[in-house]
Amino acid sequence: MMRKYGLSADNIIDAQFVNVNGRLLNRQTMGEDLFWAIKGGGGAGFGVILAYKVTLIRVPETVIVFKIGRTIEQNALDIVHQWQDVATNKLPHELGS
Image (cartoon, rainbow, N blue to C red; front, side, top):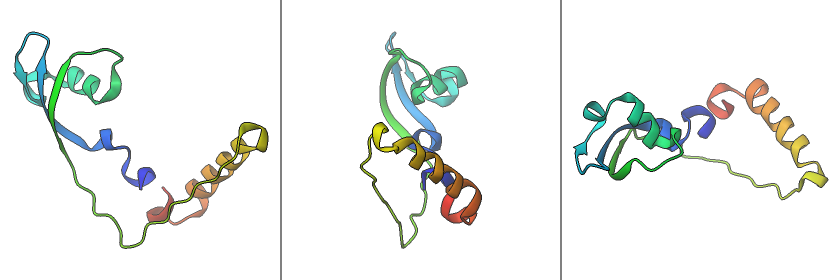
């Protein structure tokens, strides 16, 4: 589902945030640069996030998850590259990308 809908941070549409000066802010009052930063775009502490408002995604009835335990020495990168090709180019959009 991550390929189709992005990461959780990609679905954040608002936040309640207390900045370092003690002001309570939301997306509108903090501005888009700070909003981007508190979603993981910045590498520093800007204050305290009290709440996020997120877009909810309906989870399909069937979800397939798999884990492959390989190291770099066991061609893990080759497997990842092959999966990227399959997921991006060979699966129906609703399944892979």
